[in-house]
Image (cartoon, rainbow, N blue to C red):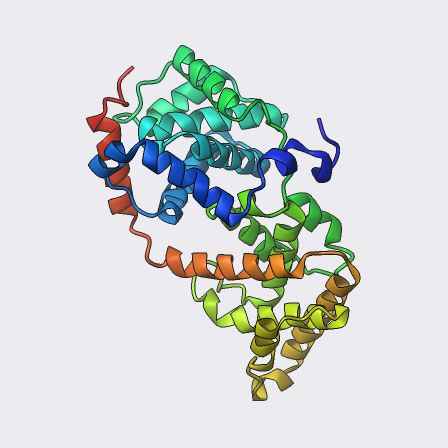
Length: 320
């Protein structure tokens, strides 16, 4: 077990570049081309949203900690880097991943309770018993090469809360952003501390009611803060600088609350400048999250559910 992220299997084996991730998925698509042509599925972002919703439904029934739910989502991402989703019953994988994650996060659930709640939740889609869940657990562990220790962004957020004088509202928004990032590819692309710092940045520039909808309007403010941090370190890029210079300012900035908000963003930028954080990675994370929130507005739950359920039933994956 690695005591820190830099020595962990997560960093050494489960952090990829975008090209590496695309190559892995492309390889799966080539190997399963007939299956993919037979059963059309929505884009991965929409699949991730649906999986997130289902795992949270099961987690609420079981009373699972958010940390365990987050770990389960990362297990599922790793698993589907190795196995084409149409080869599996996603509901079985969700139940198994959460059962395994609860054990690893030291909040174990009895296997019979997990089976009972999963069967109740997905009655027509999952014929589940203790033996089948146990077999899927072994499959999951095998595909992940027994790399089960997961480092999460929550710890960084908690440790920096007092240092950065974050209000409870800002912490809540950052927590929501971290929860949302599990519906993107970011957990497979960047270290948890980069995700946490990006979430803190967004908590400072997003309005409380903008997370999950209408967040794109705040991109300029986020980019400006990162540009300021880069400028302090002398590594500012042309595109980021341009974005910062184009950040709108109007009469509303004279408002005291807005001034305090801007001041906090500037202090955060100074903190970033003094650290060794990869600013370009934060820029990419910010852009990905904003893009995700825009994509979320186009999500069609009914269509996604029907397309998943179609291949599950057509391939007999709902049977024992």
